[in-house]
Image 1: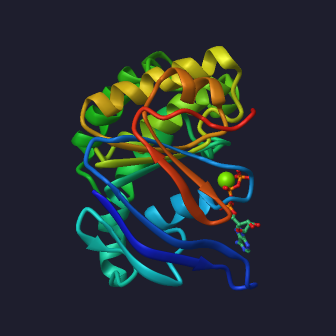
Image 2: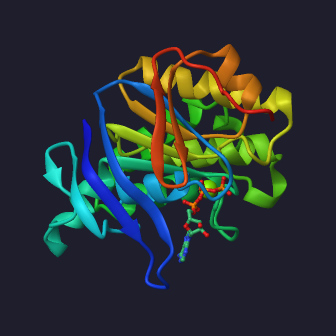
Length: 228
Ligand SMILES: Nc1ncnc2c1ncn2[C@@H]1O[C@H](COP(=O)(O)OP(=O)(O)OP(=O)(O)O)[C@@H](O)[C@H]1O
Ligand SMILES: [Mg+2]
């Protein structure tokens, strides 16, 4: 569960990115975050995975107070949150297998478990047969599926995806959405920022709309609400 109480974020240069956000996202929800460019969507996501800390307000993820987190607790909280980016961010010199396994190595999982779980998630995303390939040898959609495998390999309770279909063609985007829906169905909360009007209007979910740093709409089975 993610809870924000009167969250404000002002960047060091004085840019106000979020201004008084109040929100509760329950376990197992699938939420779209929409809004114009510069509205604060990525900032909202970065607070959840603690890439940024709030300037003011209370934020808790799975009961941990993120703003006041002790340094040694950060890895524990991060392990419980998988992140997916628009530009995939795979390590170019590592194979598909190594990219996914690496996420388990950094949290010091036992070796045997790493092998089993890595192959399991590669199978789930349909890329077991590409385990030995390098990212450059994959299509964009395949790279994003590797990134999703990496995000889920430690069985996080939340996946934060910032425009995961932003660099993909429409057909590939639908494939990624099916995969995210499957992951959600298996019990993972998904928070996804997107500009994809067609996806939001077709696969109806809760929609949180942010404009100029504030929530202007929060709707179950909502629509995109902007001209794409
Ligand atoms: N590191 C930073 N330092 C200063 N200002 C920033 C920083 N990151 C973002 N901003 C500013 O904060 C505001 C919100 O940016 P954010 O990236 O959250 O928007 P967004 O809704 O994700 O936009 P987009 O749809 O283009 O991705 C913008 O005015 C942006 O210029
Ligand atoms: Mg953004």
